Length: 111
Length: 112
Image (cartoon, rainbow over all chains, first blue to last red; front, side, top):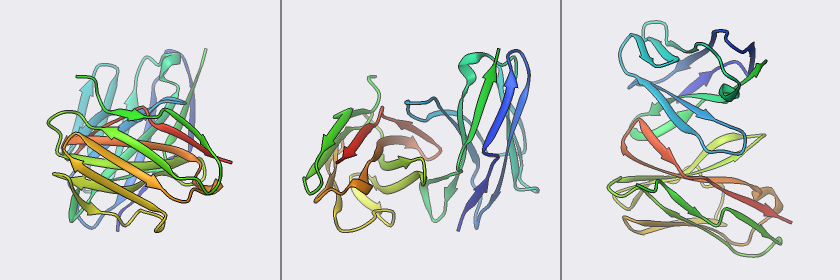
């Protein structure tokens, strides 16, 4: 089976940098995804890493180390609107369309 | 594109009543997913379809839950009879690529 671990909560101030970690255990690995969910909203796709290294998209970056079964989401120049829950997710082989989500990290950004 | 459309957005019903949630996926997407989210259990996959065929329903909690996808543009999730413990936000998501799922706005269900 698949399992993912991420911290339950992270706090930071506006303008800071925060890193949200995710470790996973999978029977087969096809990549690590990140989703953002604001309170009362729906999860929205942020990024996907299939290969080792850093993927940058604006203020957000995502990193993957397959050998360590570890990844992280890096948020720079934090803004109040970044306050949300962030979920990492992996595919669940052999049903490769199915994603298994972590329990989510709640990020609170303070002024 | 309008994105994934769900209806109703809010549903309040009494225990024992039948509840039907509806979803219209993004046009061209071939996979559709039903999720349930609660504070206690997080985001749980209930069932997913590929090309209108149910592939994995292992997350469906019990026989009171059923889902159908009669065509590529419509799916329903039915709960009959509903119970207070079914209160949750139910999301529908669709995908054209395995690692990018697009979620609808959700249906907030309250069973009294």
